[in-house]
Length: 279
Image (cartoon, rainbow, N blue to C red; front, side, top):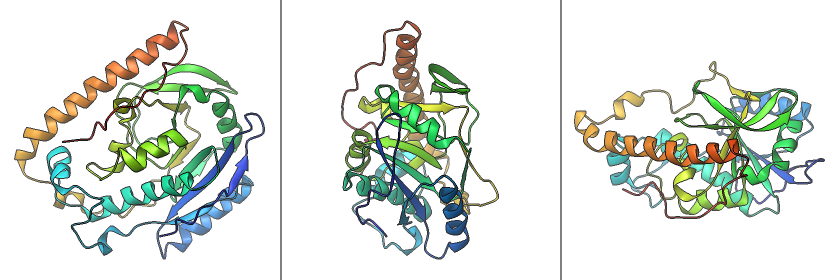
C-alpha cells in the first residue's frame, strides 16, 4: 500500500489552495489505472497512486477493525472487501496529513469527471468556510438544498438524507484528522461512516449538479457477495434503532445549517466532539 508523502496535485488559481490528489487503485487493476491516468492528464492534474488494501488478504482480527461494533451497528459479519475499501480511504487521509497540501481530492478508480472539475473545485475552495468535506459523487438521488452559488450552473448544497458512494470527494486537513482518529477503528462501511461528519461538529456539502460520477460498468470488489455476510433478522434489534438515530441527528444538524444559510447567518462554526460511531 503506497503511503509515501506527496504533494502531487496543483495550486488552484482563484483560491490559492494547494490541492493534492490521491487515486485508490488495486494491485493488478492496470486497465482502471490507465483510464484514470488519461482523465487526470486531460485535466493537467498530477496525482499520487495509493495501492488499495485487499481485504481478502488480511488476517483477522486486526486493531483497525472493531468486529463487535461492526456486527451491532452494521449488521454484518466481518466483510473483508469492505474493510479493504475503508482502510484504503484512511490511507489517503494519512498521506494527505503527511503532505504540505491544504486540500485533498480522493478518488476511486471508477469515476469520470466533467471538464470543468478544476474550476468547480477552485470556486468551492473559495467557499471553504462552508465545508470540511466536499462530495462530488453519489449513488443516491436525494434532494440537494443550495446554500451558496458557485457560478456556471453549480451550487454548494446540503443533503438532509443519507447519501452513499465515495467515488470522489475533497477533504481539508480537519476532516483528514477526523478520519484517521475518530473514524478508527472501523465500525461501519466507509460510505456510511464518512457521511457522519455532523456528529463530530464538521461540515459537509455537495457540489450540485455533481461534477463527477461513478461508473456502473466497473463493479467493485465490495459489491460481489455482500448478502453472504449479512447477519440474521436479529440484526434489526441494534441496526434499525441506530440508523433511525443517525437519520434524526442528520436532519437536525444539517437542517440547522440549512436554516442558517437561508437566513443569511453564514456557516455555523465547526466544533469537534467524540465520534458518533461508537457502539
